[in-house]
Image (cartoon, rainbow, N blue to C red; front, side, top):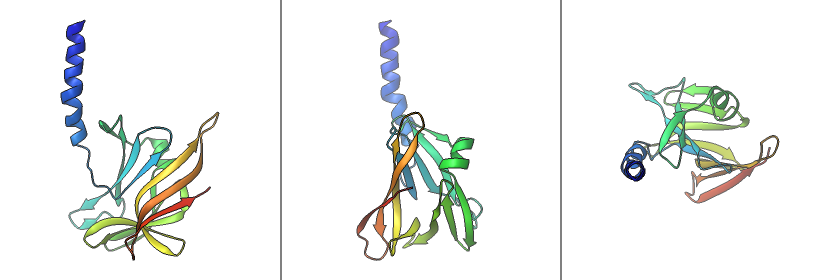
Length: 164
């Protein structure tokens, strides 16, 4: 029994950090929720010719305290965290989250870095993170979504709230 426990501890010490190191650390943006520590990553999706205009972002979950990744489920991609491309240009795409069509995100290169820009309250915001405050109960629902980012013109930190 003690041998099994020590083997498990060794695996936790040495195996999990190796898995976690494979998770990219730079994302276009992430989407977190109040329900747990899992989050959805949105990474740029490039081809040999530049931005993949049909699927400009690779989207996946980071789970288990950043120990593993997993693709979105069918329902995740169709009803919550997936995106829909609404406009395409050379090396630029405009998308929206399927759960909230009122906020277009422009995926483009700015100062040599791929970013997602939203226009909210008269300013262009480079999105770093969305955070959804969820109300749990019989049915889970979203109370609000916070946008965290940087003002594209002034480079000041920005926090905006969306209420459904």
